[in-house]
Length: 623
Image 1 (spheres, helix red, strand yellow):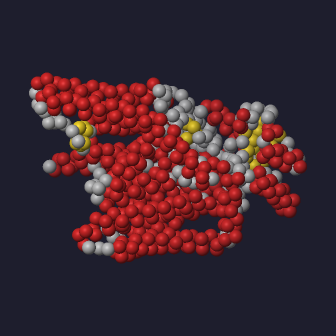
Image 2: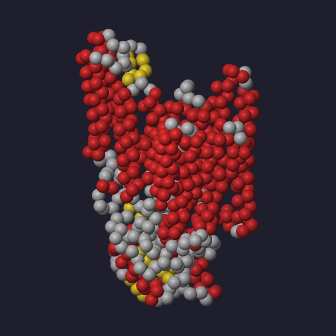
Image 3: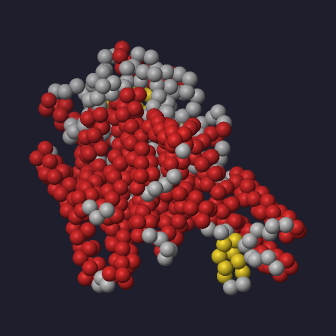
């Protein structure tokens, strides 16, 4: 007994170590010219001078936390910052693991498997703190709500509200997370319904309980907002904050994908598109259920065997075993059929670049399965109120997470730190406990559903693990040929990258050093915002001005303001650095007539006497 306990403790410690370090596996992989360096530049140059106020205030707490991280030891390099931001994913995985094991009483191996899958699906670079800090506070809310409701601890409900209130300052589009109050109401309703018969409690008891729990949640939510808005008012002035958020709302005029209706429609469109595969897998499952029902009925008639019971001898036993083997083979063939039909790819088995093909469609089916399980367990009459609560919260997390993003369902796949363990856990319970159900004279055997479910989950684990091991974000896709490093740049030391990219960056850095441009303000254009951080050159106004969400009118005003500063303060002109291969451009910029923002920059350079002083195959630099 003691030996088994030691073995169990050793295994759990191994799980904890893996979950702590697995999120840090790619901190030296690839040079991303988009989100990674862009966010680190915002952290380093945080403030009204170098940041667009819309992004400063709409993601304020994320920028503030990132700015603090940059003051930690060895945070003066890309690897160092990747390490510190990666620890947030480690914290998510470990918090999810302990919650699932200690509070939900999941087996350790199931909780570990779920967290391993969740980390493997984290496609978004950890530098994007407004995502990962959102997930940390969202997970904190789930844990605190569960503890507060099941243990009747109002302080936990208030802390849960504080988490969601603070999340609005992490990313303004986190406002819909207030819908987590629905889980509170659902739990109170289930609790009252289960207890009213025994205790004789009436509607007054329900409304009193709803009112108390809602009060504590919104007290925390409101106090967090009040404290944070008060700080912003003192430091920046509420007028500046309101102006930045107003621009966030007006952004949808140019970036329609950020409209609330578009975000909701796009997420449900992806679920609807994948119903094609759900329907076909459902046909296979239905065929299995019919096969077992007919076989069971046949054996009842011929051999007088109780339906659903495995025969003990003779021809009936051979037939029953043959049917199970046949269906096992059919179930095992489902992944092969999916590969043949192009459902997903096996890019992680190759040496080339890996993108989202291995995980996107399987991930959406996994989300669909999660939502179906949540609905079944919530409405099942035998479910305990605690199970209804976690089912409701998991469903809400899956449904709410994509809101505020233009990445459709990809954010949900990035935030499965409770949902993935929950899905594996409920699937395990189904396979362990459910055998058959009698409907009239027909017995529905659960074996076909169990075998298809197990094969699908094993298929998902294989796809997700392969993706997680090989994928690292770079310009929205993945990295490949990590055989080169950039020498002489402390920010990029020991970062492995593609040799061509290393050559481009090395040539650019040599130019910056030769012309003594370090520390100069820069205007970047063409999908290269990360260069502000890598070259240690603060953006003149916004390092990612080619984004659709950064309007033409805003950029025009920023350039005019830059010119005004040059005239009044006698400052050095910002460097202009352009990606010559951006968005289908040719190296001599042919085809730029349709790019209105580039014309703004070109006119600005003409007015202020800029000249081309250096270029290579990738970049062009103007002074």
